[in-house]
Length: 455
Image (cartoon, rainbow, N blue to C red):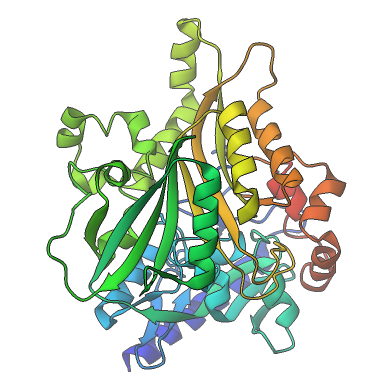
């Protein structure tokens, strides 16, 4: 009965959203009104509010026997994990930040340390219910009449429609995760080892459940392997005084609860909490544990972005301006050493997060070769601009380097491609065909306009 009531609530929310969508005058931009965002394409806060999707933030059901969940599109991974862990289950891939939504991870891509064998979050989707650009509500699966939308939805960033409900696969978990942090002295050794582990799926005879990596410098880099386990001699807690990424340098073996492992990066926004002083022992002791969250830090960044507090202080001190370098890219595993050599020489920012992945199917708007091992490199911070350089100097260098290494970059942040170059990377032919089918009146932004021109 409870599930029926929840589904009835969902259908009422769908009808209300359809009516509000239809009421928006033609020519007016259509966006979602969201309380949180993990994008780094900043918009003017005075911009008119978008569609209210606050009624689409619930886990509708968890089927422990079938290992599936039915989830509304604005449900956060934090809420989904809270609903699945009591059943001994988790999503196949849980992006690192608690407030990332299911719909956002599918339409904008996501990745984590299970991606080396389970791909990206959209590869666990069985069914999508989508509000399309022309106002229809359609259900897309791999093999129905909307399969083109199902496969074209990932990396479309809400420019073909908005996800209202998803049915996804789940995987079984154990209570704890045992970690091994393996140090490598150079990128060539690391990339060879990562390729071998991903290909075999085992390390020293044990099945590997999680793989990621952290680069602290050209001669200090780590692969972290995770193994589900039923028991642990101790568990570390990095929600208080401890800092997870520092533990990688300090421990060769560690144990976390499965929940703490899933959210190990959120507490300090990887390492970005250091910009707010939260890693200083005194500040950390005074900073409430409940405020050690990525969404809190992001709100602080947004405030500074609006009011330019730090930039004004640095100008007053006579310092050169800083450039935001906030990107995730993928290159084939064999090209990781070349990318890291470039990055150390031209950007010089650390740490860098590494995460191997293999796509299990073909997804046209983010065309990774199925079965080929890629490595995601994530780097988030600021770099001081050299004298006389344009404000986007480092980001443009990265974009060109990634293209030259047979890679791609995620579109959640800044991009500078020409229109022709952009569509070569992100399959413009398929995208335009989907746009004509599901948003012929162009009520939603074009992908290039949204992700490059920043409209």
